[in-house]
Image 1 (spheres, helix red, strand yellow):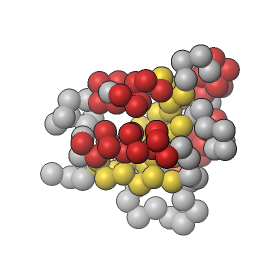
Image 2 (tube, one colour):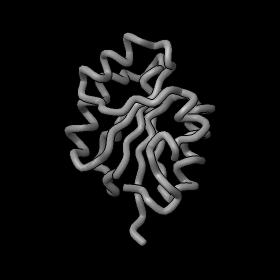
Image 3 (cartoon, one colour):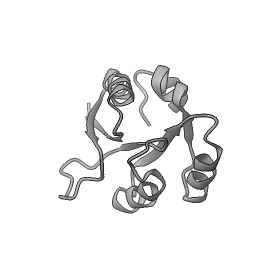
Length: 120
């Protein structure tokens, strides 16, 4: 079985821990960071998840950077359901799927449409 890699861009320890655990349960090896790695990534991610609601990460800017650096990766973001402006900007930046915090933190696999054995 080919190992899937996820890049989690999140500066919040609580949310990063919860998202990481769910991804690992689904068979991903998770690389967590507070910014896009400056050095070339050894294992190109299959999935990138960005905490768009972060107060210190430039979430919207990270969208296009991740899409350019990792063109084959599925890029997703999450933020609060009431963060309407962030959600609007993320859609304008080309993000097709924006999860609510609840979706990302409680049942990520269901929100992604994944079964435990289907990560595509």
